[in-house]
Image 1 (tube, each protein chain N blue to C red):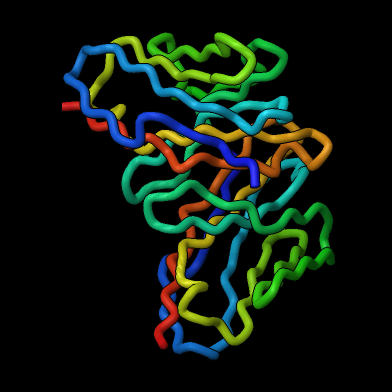
Image 2 (cartoon, rainbow over the protein chains, first blue to last red; image 1 turned 180 degrees about the vertical axis):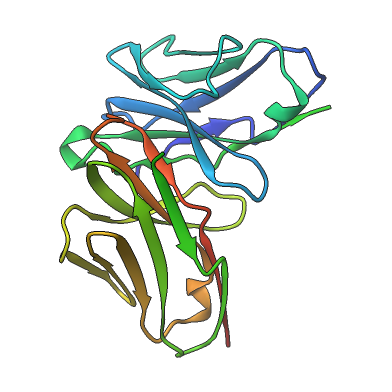
Length: 115
Length: 111
């Protein structure tokens, strides 16, 4: 069964450093997302991406964050200058509009720890 | 503000003991109500979509229902493998691709 894959599974970084989280969405999906979950809190929407551009973003997704689909298979989230409060599990998701775009297929996440 | 609230936050059941999880929403222009299952250290796994009041969906021991203000996830004769966190989520007409999640109900089924 096709799945969303994320790398790395764990990332430790120093405050102020740049990190790039990588995702390979399901190949025939057209919508791509990043969500995050701080330990013990809700899964929070960050950004959605469609047709090579951001279609929606939350208040969390400020100028420190960016997303890119550099080729036909990868989808990345970059945090330019990490802060302690960026520590969270980051989930990539994708969806196929024919199945209902809210039917999200999530990866297993990247646990980001900012020290 | 659009909100999704789940109760209880944690539920412990004996194997075979049926129960229901609650999700109430205050979302203007609800487009869809979703249930996901999340295992520890994993991403949420899609279970159901409900679009209109009165709608019901079933999958094995799980049945999801929707009213105008809340949704229920009924678990019939649960097994230990049903232990997980169950997340309710909603999308609304004002947030085209945004899905808002509740905090979840952590279910533990004891053999």
